[in-house]
Image (cartoon, rainbow, N blue to C red; front, side):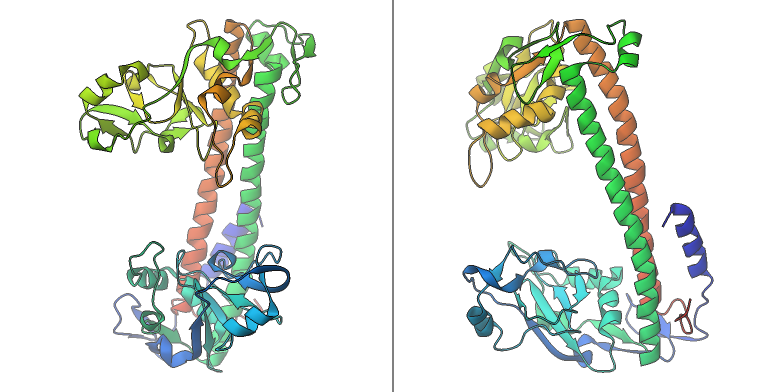
Length: 466
């Protein structure tokens, strides 16, 4: 569905009129509903409600799927049966007091609270304590209730009931006290069918736009990787006064491939005056509101710093570690979790410090941003993946950064490549931003549409064939 078709769909939705008469629910956040609708606590609509197992069970290669909160999305359930299976014996034990059946609504109640979907499978399933199933009375459509659970006002009520914990969750006793609506049965079906049709179209468009975002990001990544190993495209090379078709030679490094004949490949430390580690001792005692900025791994993004959350340290502590002082144009590289991610220190952070990052000072004739692009690109990340260690998360050391093989074009060509990449990546980033904004608007429209439908702001009676 194109944007033009979506606009038509929006206008079609707007043609629906409100119900002829409304009444107050007495519930501030729910407001008015159609006069003939019922409102009452969720518990009155239920036959059963139960959360999943609180224990741990051995995983097997052939058994029953074990569902958790991450498997429940907006109106959908996604289960990778290779991911988590338990034996039929364990399933029988943990589901002795009940288990989801076709037509039940699954609702996440721990961690990412509030995602819901109707369970439509026939096969047995086990579920963890992060998920609860709700079984409704015959006159209450589970599909309508799943949409009601997705509405922002219900989500807000759930969040207000979350108990503080390592992973916040809501108790079922609190959940069942939340007021819900109950239109007549025929209207429930009309509303659910209408939302099925409309959300399917919206979700399809969101999926296409997300795929476009991924393609743009892949294009961006491929452009950077090719340019830092093969040089500028012919048109850009001519504009920079460079040979548009330089002869190539083997780099001697499999994952770098061929490079222009006049380039070299050498260990990263050969283009630097310094490759060292930042402050590696505890610094919490030296934190202050007005001091020297200290860059942490959470501040490092590919090629740039995220300065929203920069902490500061006492000046005496920075002076104590003055050998680690950062200067404009230095590079900082993450060692753990996202190893190899590298950013350039901007002029306004001259004299700052960094915490346990690898810091490097390229030689004056070298272009810092070129090597930042290289280390963040596929040739750099391949090296860090190969050389890093650790199981839960990958780690790299100063020597690994020092000996990272990098390409080195002549200095003027390094700067031309950086100018080209900054221009082209800015264009791609702008396109990604535009598409992401469109996705956000689609989510807002989806949410608003569900809210209008499940609270009776639009009259959907007689829409079965629309």
